[in-house]
Length: 193
Image (tube, rainbow, N blue to C red):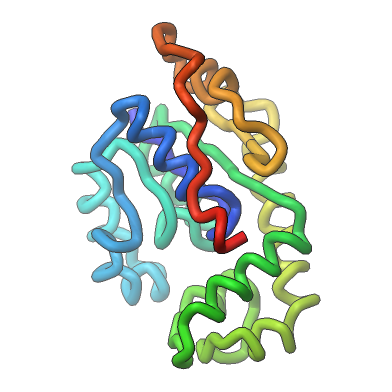
């Protein structure tokens, strides 16, 4: 079984991955070990990514959570599970801007063009702030599309980790029967919120 965390960056995906590590669900496919495929993903060529994915059980961040890639993953990897992490749009956007404030140089990041309908891949806090409405609209629209796509399916879970820090929804979703519920629920990247 594969589990794809398809929430946008800054929605608790790092916390979710820490949960998976605590549960012993590894190895994890993430941006760091998948970034060599980003140009192929951007151009709609997924064959090498699908081959690459065979070595992992759990997936977070790009390219796994970008745009509508979840549709392709759902078709390619039958019996997979999908977790959409969400948070309030305004706090999500602020966290996204704060994340890019840490980096003082201009970041070139083509996936944001597809994800947020940006006109340029020059990512700075100022460029994000100038397009705030467009970015928030794209974030909310993508979440709605995901909820519609997976509506009524038992291989999908949506969680707002800013509102819950309980193990039970994850354990139930992944059908994990034995786990110490007294284990502290992680909260990663607090300073970036």
